[in-house]
Image (cartoon, rainbow, N blue to C red; front, side, top):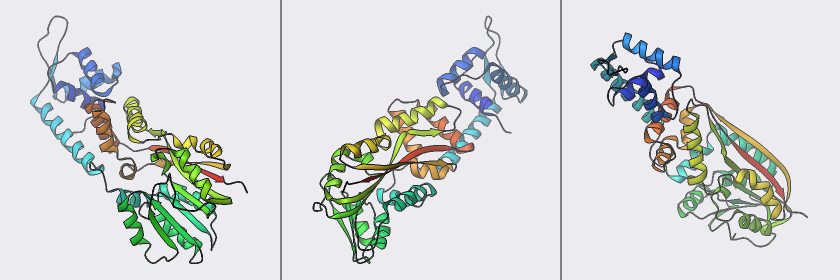
Length: 345
């Protein structure tokens, strides 16, 4: 027997004990952050009574409370168990290994789209020296090394020794490639020694993005080019009936998870302040229609639970938000900015 969302919400709040109509809607609001419309609530109550899933108790004054029948409680348990299984299969709870996360993110359609824009803008040539800041496990550096050919040099920098080890293993067959463990705030390269620089989603985590850009300007040759890509996490939107829960999820990402969450919109200004000429700013909006792929990028379950622990939404609202994402047609969007900046000749 199928139930609508409104009917399921009524069953959920009545599982706590008998309630009358007004109190039912108040409990629904406490659970989800919004009330059911009068017609929606009335229809849900009528249909649930018709299915013998709820029943009235004796009138108390002007109020006539309703309670779950044994059949209603059994159906609710079945529905919640089914939804929980779907949610658990759909979303991962554990934080993935960072190198593995970077590799699987690079394999998504969304990442391929903006990286294609970046690569076209970087315009590398054989014989050039290219620098990848925050190279991670080396996927982009491998491609860049192929573009500059053995006559050029591809230098990767990352602060994480695990990432550096993975990248070195990956690039073992590229004699023109070198991976160094170093801080992007103090680059291990000489002044005016690099033709092209690339940074993909690194500055959102940097302690001082302006200082990193000043370092890139130092190591770039006059006329050299820097291509950057960074997201603006305030642009993260979900199609979900609970708008407040979606906003709370995004607000938690912006305020608690990502150090420089709106760096995407700031890149052009920061680059200009560091002495670059900013040629183009290209917004690339990722449209995610597969909940599983979105979870691989956004960590929906673990971050929703973190948001609840931090008080951005209730635990019940976080779970209901996830359950709805798992069972309804999915749509989320986030905008990343590709910025092309040249060191003046």
